[in-house]
Length: 275
Image (tube, rainbow, N blue to C red; front, side, top):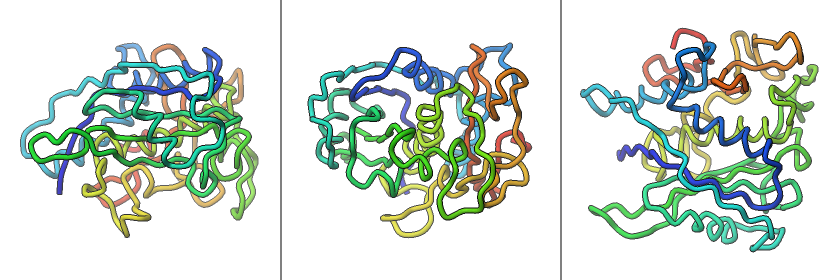
């Protein structure tokens, strides 16, 4: 089993996003490893720290605090690959990151269609680059899509009514952007597998590689205590906006993040339940 920690991120924005939409994603990534002293708890950094447990399974040494950096923000407003993407177009977009040992996050806007999107809401993989010390993967590819208008029932729940699940009232998105807030949910889930636990398909996962359950995908739909299919669980609610959330960042932005699988207890651990 191979374990690898990625510390650098590049964002490739494919299509048109407003500055406030881009800020939601950038803020989330920057908050993963830096929680200001006055940040309300639980925080995004608290959620991310749970991935340290996977490192502890492989190493007896204490894990030093890792600083994750957002390196490049690449804008592709003119749709250099068109508006209909297969895997090859996503790989070419990810290659624009041009940085070794980095996660290149490709985010496509609402008017870009991606083959097979509705069945997965995002995926991660890697491209083989320069071989260093016998390791091939140098570009780790994470795909994120705009779920507000494309398959919202599959990819933007609980901010939209689900399909094939018991119905419950839709929650108000924490940043008033159903598409981007839904994208953060999927981004967080995939980063837990991409950045630390299973970037190359030979790390921590269960089930077949083609349909693996990873640290961030083993607990679908669980956001708070008491969650069950169709119910996200007990969450904090902003008294002014009515938005539901479970993670804070320093600039008063809020997010909703799903539970991570705890390898020590073999159970799902929603944020704020004893991490």
